Image 1 (cartoon, rainbow, N blue to C red):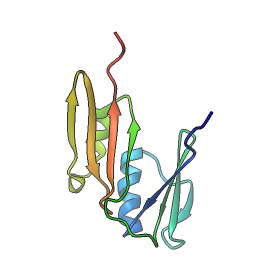
Image 2 (cartoon, rainbow, N blue to C red):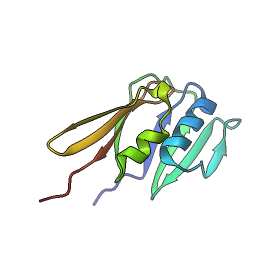
Image 3 (cartoon, rainbow, N blue to C red):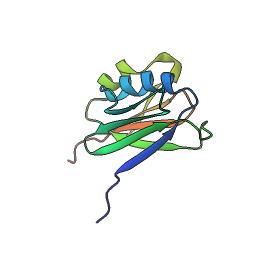
Image 4 (cartoon, one colour):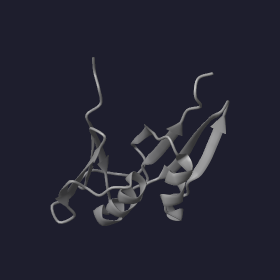
Length: 112
């Protein structure tokens, strides 16, 4: 059985990315610093590593799940151009981080 353990997210400006991801994830990094060029977040067992030195800008996109999209939407900065999209009872937020990476956060309607 496979499980995702680490997600590496390139950042053009690590301080801006830290502010964005701290707001989105509603928690701060557990390791690293802007001065070191990398920050690690622990999100329920998934490590999200923000790092400099790679070419950011939309080459990466990924999906997360959350049980309260309205709460997450309230934390997203306007600069990320967040929007809620939905159909068939499912909803998702689409936003861009400061480096231009696409983030989608899903909420799935309960099975009937």
